[in-house]
Image (cartoon, rainbow, N blue to C red; front, side, top):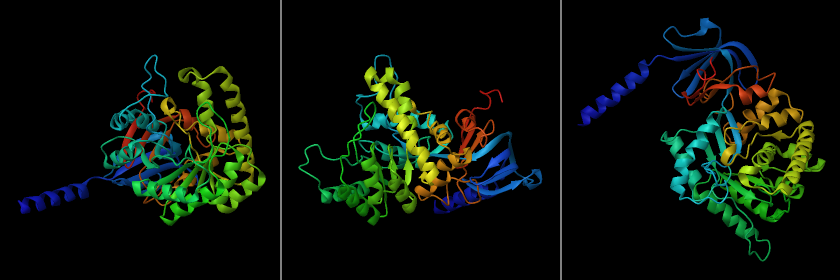
Length: 411
């Protein structure tokens, strides 16, 4: 039996060794830093072996996929999702208030994962889930048992206790340590109110509490994302050493310069409030809630414009929930409105995002040794960012094709 087992392993290795290389041709390719023409990407398993130019660079025995009518970009990274927020869209049912067992949620949330892949997003940072559902999705996807983007997860976010007598940095430190011990990749902190139809900016966690969380997480080798709808919470989050700050309006120049100095990544999530306005009837939001949402969008955009001019590192995060999956990359349009070039907007979803995730040598670029995450775009994404949002025709993750819409698009 042992001999048969060894022989089986040898045969498997021989088959893998003799497998022909895979070469993919693109009319144009943006590798994360530059745009080139007539590119050939050669794969070895789930990694990129080489990137060259022209048909003469195709290995003679390669299996060739011809995508020369498209522009290749790296697999995109959405830095702020809630993948386990699933809505079945049944008549009479609202997205909020549904109750399911975590295992059922994980199964149903596969739909969110597939819709995310269809946008060209092959990696997400998921910032808040209950019942360890995000841990389960992360692990199932990593095992190949579920189809979806690779996930970096935070589990249950840390919030201020409702019955707290006052600030308690030590309790917050313990909470951060517990999140890491539970298996979280990131620690998520709710530093203010504000969510769904509420744009209340009241800060709920003090600077000292934020600092205790950050110091505890960093001591364990983990990073921290702090949610704050208002400027005071953003300022304190940056001062406390948060690795990224989520949302935020009315950022002052001192805070922007502090972000630049520290290298803090700001994930403004402008588009998620646009989504709430558009989906108001699905949620049953009160009519009087819409104008505050619209005003928040304007102030969020204005702060992003100033952050772009100041040189703040900005990351793309959708804050996708429920029926927003499939719209993950619409944030890129807001970045261009804020003054970014399409290339800089794409960097927010590739190189900057990969760096924040400590994946700078694996994700966010099309280069030898990197994960074989490729997206084929119909159009000119370096000229029109809308082509990234509307023109995804083919997606590869880890060397496997996970989306192919060429036939549906008549291409």
